[in-house]
Image (tube, rainbow, N blue to C red; front, side):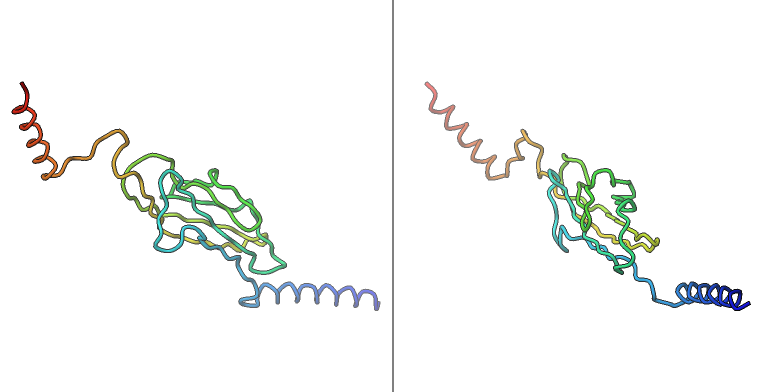
Length: 159
């Protein structure tokens, strides 16, 4: 009879412990994730538009599940372009080529083994070449005047 009472008490205590663990607010801490590169207000060149995320577990007893790391750039999945390690992930957000400035919305997410997730969002400015290679920039008014003057001088000096 005592054995049955002890077994029931153990079951009740185990259930009470489980309920208390899940009911206690703030007992679980989500992992942390930050955009480590580029820093705030910085841009990246289009030829190597690489960003880096750093992350850490919120609790030692709830490690990060690296399989849950995802990156979206302008709502397009770019996770396959990233290399993921135990504490960081880095990769390219756009393909090489293109001109001018463009801001890209970058969003990364990672979760813990228990399923607690953290997300970071940022706008990253990518700088392309100012003019396509092989093209000459448009001459200024002064340069056009000098070119016209030199052409007239050449014509006058021809035999």
